Length: 332
Image 1: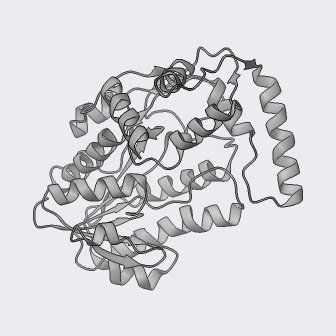
Image 2: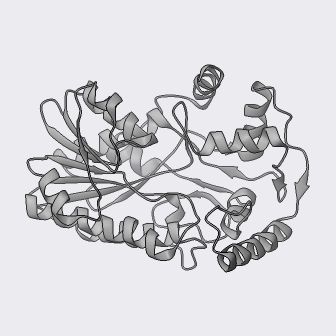
């Protein structure tokens, strides 16, 4: 990608920043789109463009001359209005597609999520033939389903598109998943939901970035991955609660031992969602139906398609990732 102009939406986020740094090492000319200023990226020689993906004119100007657009920006989390999630995640993605098409951008790599196929059932080694969820329990998943559909449907000879589905992205620099786990662990507010035997995919940040760059190279090469979605994660899934307790033990946090039945957590989530919407609370409830399902069910996926078509492989093992994460947490 040396010398190519690439543009990253959401370049100030966890995945975005790590991707930007990797692209710079590849020799790319990188521009970042975001709502804020990013002095640390500017110091690295990155062009930072401040704006919103809901602004079509802004995107038209920002994408001019780009050979690849990485569309990472999204409203994450699971709490907020349906209108906001769809405005940012779905309509924003449609705006990105239109700006790419009108600017003649040849390649678009979209950051999706495995949540698009999670349908409240265990998934053990599922592949990309899984259908989209018929009953997503949060606006995030629903809006990402619509967005991914649009991205893959837009694939053409003029604009080659591809979707990456990284699961539970973690590692140094994370300001969401791991900090929330640690906070709840230290406060003693976390309980095992269900049997505690469920396995899940996790994706170390370096591996996620690696997959994105492989995707861009594929699209600019033989484009064998064009129009497809790919699950990304570690070589092997982890037993969720064992992994969480290993993290806690290394941080000298008491391991989680107390359990709550799934149906109790799910019912509590339903009630808290109802009360939260009724009172128009901005804070996410401590439990929701979606979280209860995610904590109690297995959801891990086959990565064979990404390995075969993109050449994806795990660069950083789960153990090495844990070591790096602990070091970062202890020094940040």
